[in-house]
Length: 104
Image 1 (cartoon, helix red, strand yellow):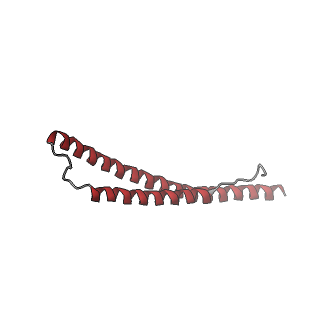
Image 2 (spheres, helix red, strand yellow; image 1 turned 90 degrees about the horizontal axis):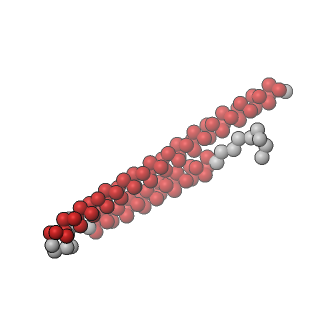
Image 3 (tube, helix red, strand yellow; image 1 turned 135 degrees about the vertical axis):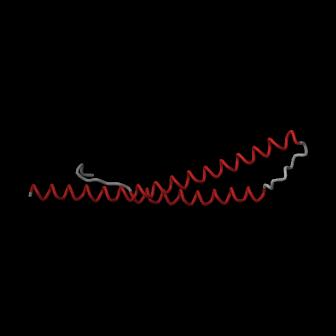
């Protein structure tokens, strides 16, 4: 590779972002499945155990939602950065070409 060349793997970054989106979709489906499987009725017969267990399940589902949002946000960021990197690569190529033409 020539030191004057600028190479950015925007395609790889974009693909990574899309895979994050797929993972976020799969994780959302997993969370929805948990919500469906877990009714509000506690499987534990004693209130001393049932209330903390319900609180735990509720917190777990909320954390699942947050993780899914983070996965989606990360994927969206990767796609945006791929576009920014593509524009940066095009700008760098234009500058290098302009400098080459100025020397010619």
